Length: 181
Image 1 (tube, rainbow, N blue to C red):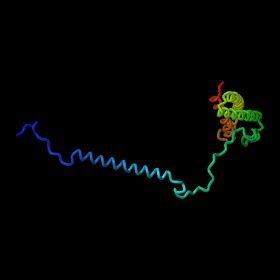
Image 2 (image 1 turned 180 degrees about the horizontal axis):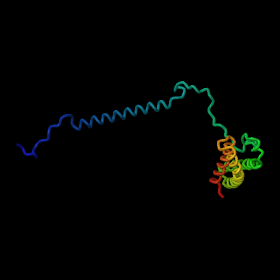
Image 3 (image 1 turned 120 degrees about the horizontal axis):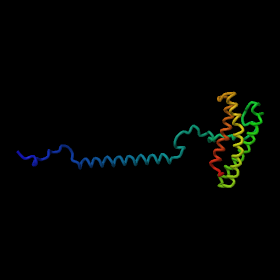
């Protein structure tokens, strides 16, 4: 009986490692070819004109445009929204709307100055707008609280007052970030 160190390894059954490597190479090349064909078909489909793509059911409709935003100072300054006569006749509210309207005009000038890169005008108009909008906000804070106490925070008038004041807050926030003091 031969010693364990002299034993031969058992004979391998099946293909050798060279055959496996050959098969793996064929699979990789086949996959690469398939991907190249698919990419070519996609690029051809992308370069075809829209008329060739098939029916276009909404082609006769005009292009969609964004809705126009109404600024709080636009229109009649005494009526930023439809409110009961009691609120419109309130001198605090009327004065606040006048201030906010002036502030909105100055805000628009400040935005235009920032777009043009005019820092001096941005700071000058922005600081004036901040002062007017701040005063409008401060003067209507108690009015808003009284309306909430009287009508509740789900009342339509209260919601409109809050929305108007929130717009003023947004303007002031932008001005604080964009202007120097």
